[in-house]
Image 1: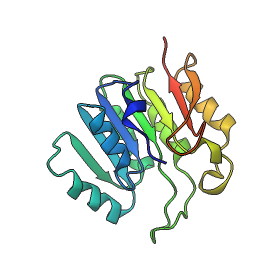
Image 2 (image 1 turned 180 degrees about the vertical axis):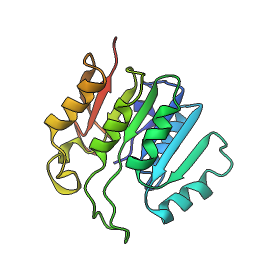
Image 3 (image 1 turned 90 degrees about the vertical axis):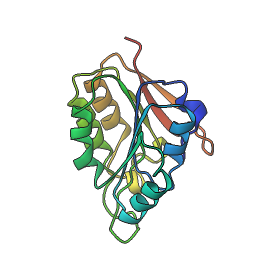
Image 4 (image 1 turned 180 degrees about the horizontal axis):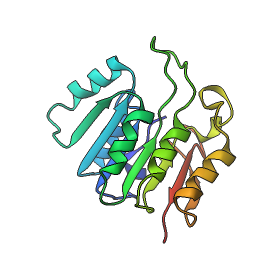
Length: 174
């Protein structure tokens, strides 16, 4: 489900990083929330190409094509300040179907590589942990990974526009 600019305005870091571009709703929300730098990672070549075309004139939007598990580590390594992450990548079989396991744990491991411990991390599809395309991910695993990044994270559940309590936010207060 898409994130909204109203939610993103609550977390005004200089950089927005999204995994799972799909129909570009996350990028659109980040633009509306005035993020100075926006990155989106999409594994499906056709969706990546659509995003590149759609945001061609937005020079501060960078669309990357490939697996978030592969592309996120060097992007995280390049950060010099806290970023807002929107983790919404799904597994991909190459034919447009959801074939591979969710990359969420690998994404969190990539964020954990950072020396910065105060990133804002927003995770979509919290309601399907342990089922469907998130069948390889449990809430306990996610919480453990988040607290490894920052043991002081405040974990909160938020509504997305279509489902109550479907976003898990890791917010830094320290």
